[in-house]
Amino acid sequence: MSLLVSRLLLLTVTICALATDYTQAQQQQQQQQASFDTTHWDDDETHFNSSLSAILVPRVVGSRGHEQVRNYLVNSLNGLGFQTEVDEFKQRVPVLGELTFANVIGYINPQAENFLALACHYDSKYFPNDPGFVGATDSAVPCAILLNTAKTLNTYLLQQFRNRRDLGLMLIFFDGEEAFKDWTNSDSVYGSRHLAKKLARSGQANLGQRYIDRIEVLVLLDLIGARNPKFSSFYENTHGLHSSLVQIEQSLRSAGHLKGNNRMFLNRPAGGLVDDDHRPFLEENVPILHLIATPFPDVWHTPRDNAANLHYPSIRYFNRVFRSFVYEYLKRHTAPVDLRFHRG
Ligand SMILES: [Zn+2]
Image (tube, rainbow, N blue to C red; front, top):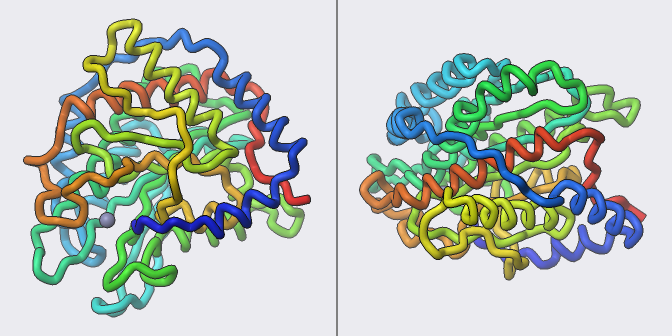
């Protein structure tokens, strides 16, 4: 991704929000975040470690490692009881020519009215001088976190949550997030552009009921795995959800489930925006919760973004907060949550 201080985009979206709708959205969010008496879910570090080691290989689009990781994601999702879909397409890109991309999507309750979508990208960046680049924080760890969230919540997901009609869960592993040459709107986020377009066309688009409008929020994880990352709030319509992460962190800490004095989730707006896989969804008015460490890890886009430089206590910490957040969202959900910007 690129650190794009896209204030223009923020402004464009913001002026579309009607004050009354925003107040309504805030009230909904406040209901969602009322008093967290967080259930504690056990870690499964054996599962996390084995997932990470399967993903932590060079996986540039079109490579053997890329195909292996794609298959691993599909098999893992199937094994966790998800219905799995592969969104495959070919596209010509700078430097490497025509490539086959494949987003991997897992669903629980695919027929539900609305969805919580959790996402990351699984391709690794192509560096002509560094064929061994594994992108540990970018984004092998986020992919392993998503699988581990599904694994640790699996009894809940497959017993109480399964067959709910109001809400489904989507895990999206985007392909082709990285630029092949220089980051531009056209040389980046290949997979998410393809999937957003597809979801915007599917459903009963002619009746104004598009599949993409059923995503209540897209939670995008990126650049996670270095020591003590900080997460700020990027979008005002999802600020309530970001605040609930802050509160869950506090609750888990008071209950003795988190160690150390660092706070990971900051109850403050970020100073700018970061361009990433959420862009095509944001353009379709999907609410975005962007969980990307800012500042970026100092190993970002260097050969040092590898296993040796990961900080496991920080990863464990993130896993605990994130898992509780997902569980609370699913458990508390009773009516559709509309955080979209409404055009006046
Ligand atoms: Zn990257």
